[in-house]
Length: 541
Image (cartoon, rainbow, N blue to C red; front, side):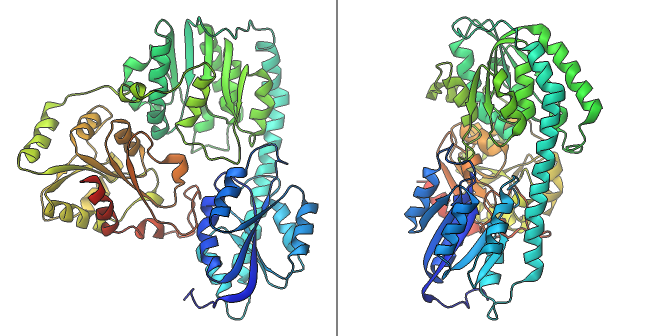
């Protein structure tokens, strides 16, 4: 249906987009498709940070697939470029997660363009194929207005967000900063640290990827008392590894409340100030906060300490304004995708600590559950290999179909591989749909981060969806076959051991799990059982 557009000899097309941290991963499949339809594909990238941050890695990636890249820094420069290529077709792209004040610049360029054929749509290759395969060249008005609505919605969200940040800074957090921080006794001599606070209230996978950094900090400062500040919904890996810290504080920050994300209000402020009052009594020597979001930076700066190391995301107005109160700020490049394990590493590098192999191997505590080991060794004694099969996923967009799990389990068994099914309590419904005629070991809804260590350590390899257990398996030194759909693999792939990534997508990488399909998720559906067995042959070598 979508391949009906013939190759257009000597016809060229221009893609116009903002530079973002995941732009290459979103545009690569689009460029591949267009290169089969046009003689030349040009890329116009809007450098809305005016060369304050490096984007050469993005340009180099496009050049590898024979796309010529032009960068413009102002709307005027963009207009000149567009006019010079007016004989080309134009494709202006926006995406769901682009929330900034420059997004309307693409719409303005679209309006002013003198090109005869021009399209304005979302970064999704399915939509682009539909547009370009339209034989009558009639723009899909529904999609057109949806895209314009998306651009205006994201602009308004950014405007609301920016005004909210400015008001909160000048009327609340700025005055508090000058009151609590300006006259504090600062000490950048990091040789003698008695009390260290490490803040990370993130997802489970983020916490697991932070454990090697925590291990390094504990070994490099053995005489220091290390306190970890985490959240109740992601503290399980920390509770399973008490050797990495001296004190664990569990606090659910109001800005991480998913149900009331945009209703912080007076009650949330009181909750924050009350917690701040209590934690300031501990008088830390050093505070380490890897995340760059505004309220995380606010918390790290207002806690009583002699030195603060914090990530700063330039896209967050509140974080930028609070930067003046951070002793050692780490300015993150908004054009780069950082892996979730990189943020704490960057912080530790500022105090002379590098993550070594022994820190990774010694990060997770060893647990022995004799009943679990007995079940696994029973199958190994029968000549079977053991596969830890993770059916959980952090989002329904990342789930795999139950019928494919059923077929995979049976095909593994034919090859003398027994499957150990792992999943959370809310995966029990999915587990009941998985029907097989062969034996398996079922731990769905019956695991925690202690017995998971035993299961994974005694397994031969792991097949996992994009979830925290995937990172745990990698940390424990197991080979992992990881199934990715719409996720950004550079952000969340396993990094501690050899990994075989199976990724299928429709040009939606980095979509933030926002899918245009509501009842089915084709990215994961495209992954077949045969894809897994191709990777499995490498694991079993």
